[in-house]
Length: 117
Length: 116
Image 1 (cartoon, rainbow over the protein chains, first blue to last red):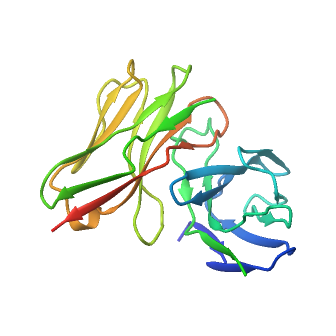
Image 2: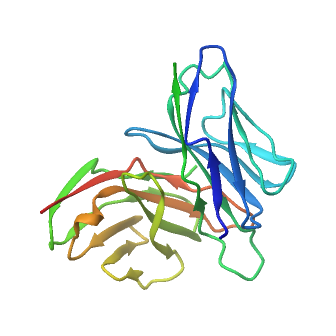
C-alpha cells in the first residue's frame, strides 16, 4: 500500500544532542512538508520541499535542518540549537500541479513524538 | 501571508445532535482551497472535507457539510447526527491554488467532545 512512513514513533533527545526524524513516502509525490504540533498551537510549518535538492524555510525553521536527496525521503534534524524541541512532528506530501489530477490534498504520516530527557 | 482563525478552542455536542465549528481566514487571493481535517486520539490526520474557492456550492460528505461564505472569508463545518467517533481535534486549513505545491496554513484547532 502507498503511504507515508514516519519513524520512530517516539524519540527522546538529550540536551545538546542532534536527532533525526525519518519520513519516507512511496506515493511518487514531488512535494514534502514538515509540521510541528504543540498543544493549543495547531500545526506550524517547519520546512517544505517542492522538488529534489530544493527546500524552503517555513514559519519556525530555526533550530531545524532538512535534506532532500531523494524524492522518497525528507528527513528532519532537530539540532541542539532548538531549545524547546518537545512536540509532535508530522510529515506530509502532495503531488505536483499540472499532472491532470487534483493536487490540493496533503497526505500525512502518523507522526513522531519527540521529548527531551 | 494567509492566516486561519478558529475561535472555539473547545466545543461539545450531545450524541445525535448537530454542531457547527467556526473558521475564518484572511487572504488577498481569489483562488484557493479550504479543508477541514480531523485528528482523533491516534493523532492521525484525516481529511474530512474540502472546498474549492471558485465553487459556490457548499461541499458535503455524508454527515459533514460546510458553509462557505467567500466574501466574509468564513468556512464553518457542520456535523449532523453526531457520533461518539466524531470526538477529535478539528483543524481548518487554507491552501493557495497557484502552481507548484504550497503548504497548508492551519488554524489552532477546535477540540470536539461528544456526550453520550
